[in-house]
Length: 148
Image (cartoon, rainbow, N blue to C red; front, side):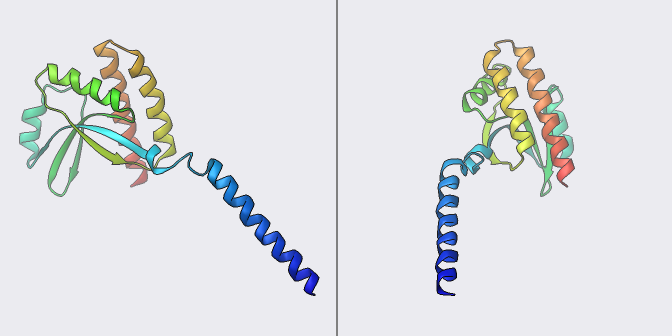
C-alpha cells in the first residue's frame, strides 16, 4: 500500500514538472500579446446622419454601434508600423486617424490579419493597401457576426 502511494505521488509530481516545462516552452505561443490589434479609428459619432455625412467619401470603413455611438474604423492590423503607414495614407487625404488598441481572441482572425500584414508591409501602392484593409474589415465583421 505504501509503495503504491509513493509511486502514485512520484507520477503526479513528474506530470506536474512535465506540464510546467511544456507550458513554459509553448504556453505563450497564443498569449494575449498575440491578440493585440491596432484599430485605425476615424471618429466617433453620436448620430448616424452625422457619421454618414462625415464619412461619405470613405470607401473602406467599418461602422460599429455601441452605446448609442457610431465608431468608424478604417483599418485593423497587428503591426504597429503598418498601422502608422495606413494612418499616414489617410492623413494625406485630410483624415485624422487614431490608433486604438484592442484585444480579440480569435485564432482564425489572427492568422488572416498576420497574412494581410505581410502583404501590407511589402506594398507601397495605396490602392493595394486599401484593398487589403477592406478585406480585413470585412473579415472582422464576419467573425464578429459569427460570434454573436
